[in-house]
Length: 64
Image 1: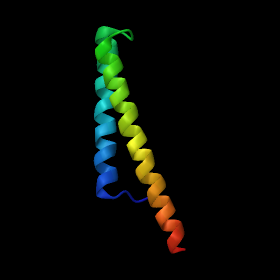
Image 2: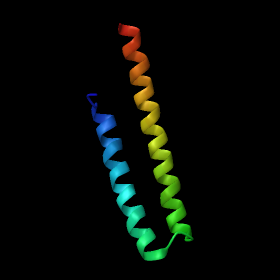
Image 3: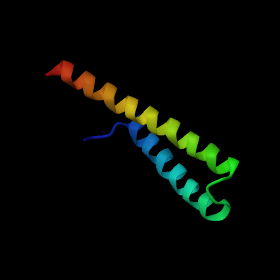
């Protein structure tokens, strides 16, 4: 699959949030509000990425 610029940008954000989340978990543990917030942010960005991919798949099906 070829990624467009918005998809690439979101993938970079996801990668950064995953690293931040892992670092925070190592420092603060799993039961910390900052860890929970970063996890929620990561979930939201991953949902946005999934939505973009699904929209692209739908658009590509219309062209077939």
